[in-house]
Every structure is written in C-alpha cells, then in structure tokens.
Length: 493
Image 1 (cartoon, rainbow, N blue to C red):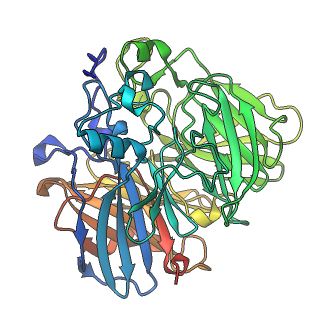
Image 2: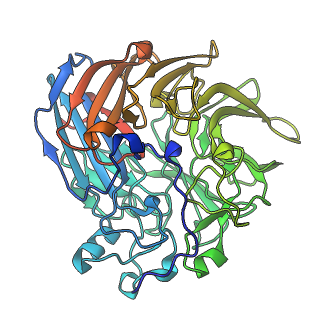
Image 3: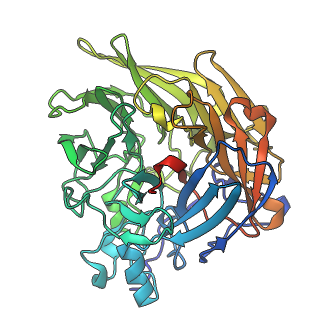
C-alpha cells in the first residue's frame, strides 16, 4: 500500500525531545535497527554493593522507515537491560517481537503506516495486534511485560529479553484485543497490578475498562465506565481505596484519520475532567468534575488523607506534544506545552463542585517517577529529569532532580551541556529500605560523541553529588520512554 500524502507537517521541538541533539554538537538521533550485546561493560567509579538486579527500559525504534506524516511514537519497541550483579554489568537489547513486528519482518516492509490509524493498514494484517510495545515495561511473574496503551501486553523472558507471548492475556483472562495501559500501578499493600484500558469495547468507544490482577496472574476485579469523550488517557492514579482519571482535550479525530493522519488532535474547545471512583466497585459512583482545558500525561503519585484524594501529576496549559496537531490548525506553542508538577485534590465525602490544583515546584517535569513501592500510599520523594530551572528556555543543562514533598524543596545534579538524559528510575537498596533510600539509574547520551551512551548511577539521597558510578557503553543505547527496576531477590532461583 502506498503511503498517503501527509496533510500536516509535524513540528520538531527539540527542548521536549530527549533524544534530539542540539545542532552545535552535530549529532542527530536516527533509529538503531540493531540488537546489541555487551558483556562486562567498563565501569568508572565503584558499583554499590547494595545494587543488584536489572534496569529495563523500552522506547520506539522504527523497524522500517516511518511513512511521511507519521510520528516517532509509532516506532517498534526496542527493549534493553543493564544486568547488574557480582560487581559486573552486562548489557543487552532486543526488539519486542509483537504480531506487528513479525508480520512486517516477514513482508520486509511497513504494513501499518500511520500512528493508531488502522484504516491505512495492509489488508494482510487484519486481525493482528497493532501493538508496538514501545512505551513502558513492568515485572510480573518472572516475565517482563512490554506495554503500549492501545493493546494487550507482550511478555518477554526476564533474562534473555526474547519474546514469549506477542499477545499476553494473563492466561485468557483478558480479551486479546483488550487495551492495557502503559502505566499500571503496583498496589503498595497487595502487590496487585491495577490497570485500565480506554476505547475498551471497540475502536473509538468512550469506554474505559478498569481491572486488577494479583501476583499469581488472576483477575480479581474489573468494571467498565463511560467517559465524557474519547480522550488519550495515558496515565491514571490509584490509592488503596480509589482510582482517578484526568481526561484532557487530546481527543480522537476521525476526520483527521480520514485525511490520512494520526489518531489524535488537540481540541481546545473541550474541557478537562477529573474523575474518581471506588476501587473494587462497579463504577456507578464515578464522579466527573469539569475543569478548564489542561494537558499533561504522567502521574507521580497518589494517596488519600483525611477524606481527600491527592493526585500528583505533570500538567500543561495546553497541548503537550509538538507532534500532535491542534485541531483548529494553529501551530504548536512550546510555551503552553511545558509541564510542571501539580497536585490535584478532591473531597471524597459529599457533593463535589470542583477540584483544587496547586503547582508544586519550579521544575519542568514531563516524566516524574517515584519509589514504586509507594504507588498507592502517602509518599515523600519524587525524581525527574528536567532542564536547569535557572535557564529552562535554552535548555542549557539537563538535570536530575529529587523533590521532597515534606519540605517542599528540591535538589539537583546538572549534567554537562553535551549530555542528554533519559528518564530516571529508582532502585531501593533492599526490599525493606526506607522510602528514597537507594539509587537513581538513568542513561546519558553524549551529543558530542554521536550519541554514545552511559548508564549513570546516583545516590538518591545525595543526588546533587552526581554519579557514584558510570557504566560505559561503546555504542548508542536503544531509545527509552519509560523503565523499570527488578531487584535481585525478584529473579527466579
């Protein structure tokens, strides 16, 4: 099938793209299209004795060149692993062998040419999963689940990264076409996976399926709810007793898809909705609270206290994605697409007429992360990659930051200006370590070395001191959107 002529030209905002190189360094990101193995990586500094396990991450790496007008979000998932144990680090990367990947590999060409627009697919892939499995990874039952929010997970071997099940349905407990969020939450008390999928009944439906899966892989609860409109619900919030959603004007655009474009556009005429409901309920108590149009995608943490639900997430004034068109045809505005960490709060008792929203820190924070042992309970610390707040406009330096909600303060480590940083992931010193007691793991791409990459290891309690160990790769690391840490005691014997 010939690629359709693009009806819009995606803009590039290098400030919001951690894989782009500033022109003065002369390096520009291009797909790797290569799987890499490096044994006994060179290590500068000393690996902590209390750091043992695996750092997994995944991102889009197009299997074949993207069609004109398509966006980088549509690249195939390329997963990587830094395996740390016995004072050594081995590196491995593999493509996720989804049904889409396998079909295109057999055909030697792109068969699904436009981001989440199945009307342009080659007839030969009808009925196959469209998942790219390129957004996030989590650990479950000695597997790594590679996630893309429009599809079921893909299951991979914990050690080899080889694909075990292109479509993983938890032993048939979920339909094979059930969308599964890229941001499930691990319950802090039970260890259950709490997840959801939007457009759950059929393509373009305004139905969200919410469900919960225990440590053994058994579905223990599920319900379906209706949304005010079909929004890109990328992330959500879970507490011990409630689930919350934040719908933004990033909405399905059928006319745009008919013109050969992507699934979404930013519709400034739509409102934002804060919705919450009881966990383990039937969804009939769901309460949608309307607010002004705001954007943003990612959750830092959520909890309940004294009859209120608190939902910490990054929020933008308008469209956060330079590659997503505005429905009214206006150009993307970088100033209104900047993400700051906010706290949303709502009363759980009585009639709700609105929700409160408070900006927490002067840090640009599109990818905030917490100690994942505290996903559903009160927490103190958060971690993020951000530009130097003293000069955010020019993105003069990339930083790693730790925020402290108790003192409402933050500390920073500034990387050299020739370095681009990936999302930080927290690794506790042990299963029983105190909150925030552990390490920050993040990849640095050297813009002046053709994107050669290092793994940086920082003490999470003294992040301002910079890396205590640096794991050198001889090559570029595969792309990353999100990552996950698996402790040594979580591996099979």
